[in-house]
Length: 381
Image (cartoon, rainbow, N blue to C red):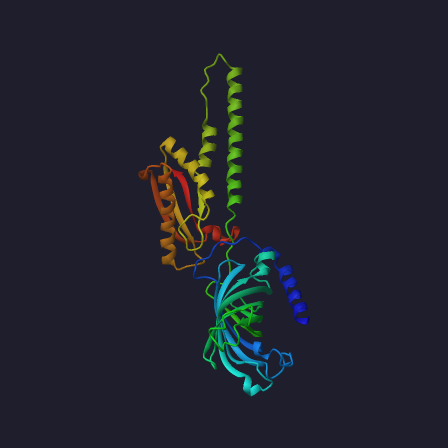
């Protein structure tokens, strides 16, 4: 109860301190968000063979408990869903009597487990949350080395982690494991429902995040599209007002030949169409992150075809990640990706010029660094 109270307090404190850091995340590459775990294990064993012996059920009895260790490697595929491969053992008890010496065995248990981060799932992702609650379940194989027998095994448990730093977390893992009937007869030790042995484990240790262990904020594409749409609506309204004023002048001076001066209109519209349109990319990727970005590009492509205009496509990468050589290649490939999309939209290839600027920090503090992972399209002379 004390542990649960402390954990709940840490959970609440973590959420209260950083509410602004909950955000939608972009997909990371395969090599990010891996972790290693190492734990000391305290285990209490309950065997099928002890039925009818009326042995003391206390997990503190010497003939039941033993110490061991566990190691695991895993990966988070989203902030809420992950998998790990876990090995634990090595000293245990096959409880057939109250003799600690007679019960001693050596064993190992290898499990593939799915983890669910409830803290991120229900409260939103936060890089600096103090406490995370992670239920899990898995299946695998266990071997009783003393009896030289194998058995199907299952597990479920509750993993608690406390943040020590960006790379390091403290673990408290509580689990229940189920195997076949003491591994003694491989032909009989295959059922987890009729005859089975159980062991309960409490583990404490550390989790080490490998490489990039956090999740980046995804570009708010809808907000950017709304901004562009707002600019377009404002210019359309201005054009409509100028056209109405021009018609008013024509109706007031019918005897005078009036030359329609559309200089202001043309300049306003040209200011809009020469504004670069951005297409965003995920970290390390050259595929367009959201196909909605191509809507404004398509409108620009249509205007360019109808007016025989030239287009400039410029690729960028953010300078805060990756080496200069990688960023140079990424920015070029992103420009080529958008160029290919323009060709699909019917723009002649010779009317498109590509440029790339490598790793940049153009937007600075005005926007997240993820916004520099983009390519821009604009009309040029």
